[in-house]
Length: 110
Image 1: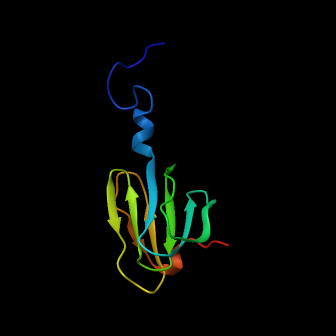
Image 2: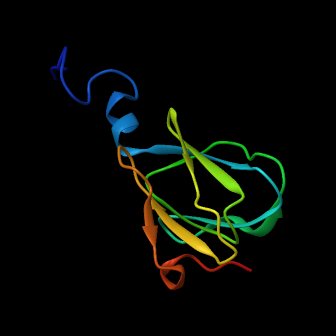
Image 3: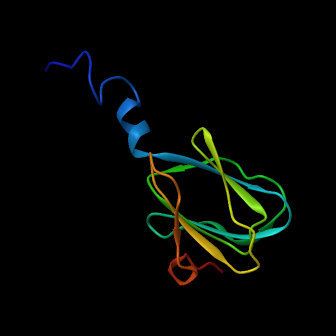
């Protein structure tokens, strides 16, 4: 069989890098976090965090924050969350800005 020498999908991981996204949660103060994978598996199961998390890699995530005391590192970019005392939720996908969801559309943990 022949392998393509150039183009999308050739080389180790080049195709996968376009289909996955890396996410790190960086609290600025104590913040409730519920982070789930695209399959609904809780990766951060409704915990109050005050220090940054490890990097999670996957095809899609949904996250709910209890307030706006947090930033999201997605790939090479950092996104702030608006200051709020209400829960705020986001849909995170590869090669896109995080999309804000209605709080009721966010994931549920615990």
